[in-house]
Image 1 (cartoon, rainbow, N blue to C red):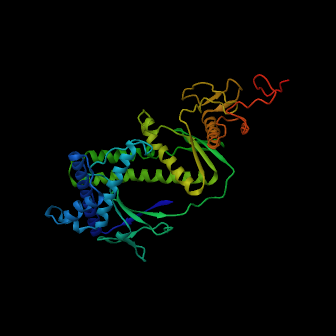
Image 2: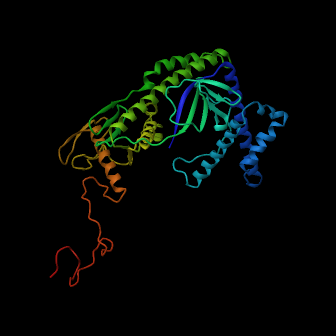
Image 3: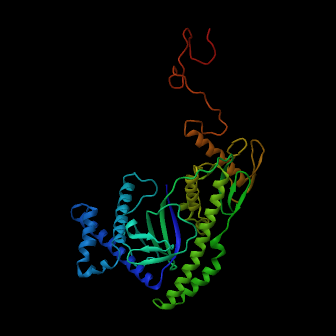
Length: 414
């Protein structure tokens, strides 16, 4: 499996200029290739092959006065931008033909030099790791890397990223073998929320860290300072960097917390079950800021990635499962309940439930049933496993025994 390791890098002033030049050249090549593809499609609905496109926008363009400066940067980064364009088109066509799952992908769009995030990719021919720990990039030089851990294997590519706050990162793609953890006996269901980030079926509660809410005052002051600066001035550029750094601190803290929490859940449980929440829909309600701050989608993605690496299972149940209405003892659906109702008593068995804890237990039971149902087992919790049909049975009705009359009921007919 492929993993990505990201490290902070510290380029010198001259290397920052060279990286900026490479960012710009890769962006121009991408836009030129996209314009050529659009023009070819509008002319006769044809597509230009990748090799011919590279010759047109890179090799031949270097010989023209308008694009002669493309020769100043590594050709490997320029070719990587063309591969990115090809991948964008492949994802679009796979999406419209229903061969790609998830939200529908749109056509590639032109890149802008005003984008807050700039990135270039180098293949094996464009970079190497020095013995002194520095990263050598073609036509840029040896760049200092803040190594926090060694790479498990030789990287196949590296992506250099400059974020909105002006920080530089090197992201390495490495090939590693899955490391299965020792089997665990426990399985857990999770009910995600805003009051508590997660309530587990075993009774543990994970508090909501609310990183954005805690940093709101600092972010507001930085944004007010930015709004008072004259547009186009150097002071406004400095204020924009301060705002971006404040947001970056929030993003980094949230990402680190998600990874640590997911690692703990994967390490302690053999299987983790949660609801398939419609996060994009919830993010359009009056709770949008809190939903974005919770980052349920990122938390689920990190869980699935770690489960795939360590041999665990992450299952999701339908978002239409009435987990807050179903009694986890007798499985009777008790009806809808407003959000302010945090405890309720089942009208059938009389058990008093905590709303979130009961929901997590329902999610656990439904997830386990769905996992059993995958190889053909029953889906409803508590249902007895039926016996396997005999070879002489057709459908759900067995053949009548010789000499028997009437419908087969399981009782001998005399």
